[in-house]
Image (tube, rainbow, N blue to C red):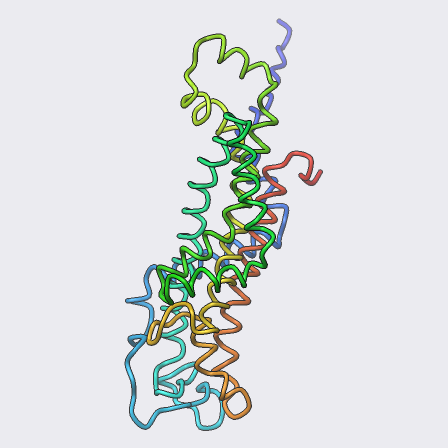
Amino acid sequence: MAAETVTHQAAPAGPLSAFWNAFSQNRGAVGGLVILLIIIFLAIFADWVAPYSATEQFRGMTKLPPYWAQGGDPRFWLGTDALGRDMISRLIYGARISLFIGLSVMTVSVIVGIVLGLLAAFVGGAVDSILMRIMDLIMSIPSLVLAILVVSILGPSLTNTIVAVSVVYLPNYVRLVRGSALAEFGKDYIIAAKVAGVGPIRLMFVTVLPNCLAPLIVQAALGVSNAILEAAALGFLGLGAQPPTPEWGAMLADAREFIRSNPWIVTLPGLAILVSVVSINLFGDGLRDALDPKLRRS
């Protein structure tokens, strides 16, 4: 009896496996993801991770250097600020504020951008022209100037910072969704859905929108870092989160007079902003490469 040779072929990888294989080839993106997850962990569990409260002051412990430097105190690993508050605690709580701003801006901008972008693409005509001219007008103003203008009208606060930065980055999402939706119009599945009697709301949000999500996800990921930078700039100018809120931009503004005498008070919030923004950008770049088959590494 002849022996039968049985060949086993590997099952095709699922979409998640294919995505992770493409994403994991980018070491920078994986490193960015790891750092970002650490920052998110610190932000979520700040109440348990931070050694002290962000606003707790220690008398006689003002402007202490990091513990490894001369004059440092091991109770305060990264030293204290001009009011005797623990720097590492304020940085950890500041991660919560900055990530909250970035995610809030991204969420508001994405939701409003999807609605306006799909509306402009499907209705067309005068509605499309008016919406796009408004978006062009917003984009024609430098982002920081526009954010300062909006906050000046509404008043400086954390909530108004989110509103101002959302207005600044809204056109990016509106134009992206509109362009992606218009690219889908001529495809067969859209024609088939219309022939089947699919209503306009279902056609927009159930049929077309899922096919526009890949570039939107990438833009949203990169938009978080832009929002953090913009909010930090407003905080530095005194128009963002107000003291004693431990927002990184506001911490930079409070410490700028000590840039020569006590440089660590200025350097640490700046490094926190730098590390967060770079890690998010690396993650966003890897996300873009993994979601776009044309950019995947062979």
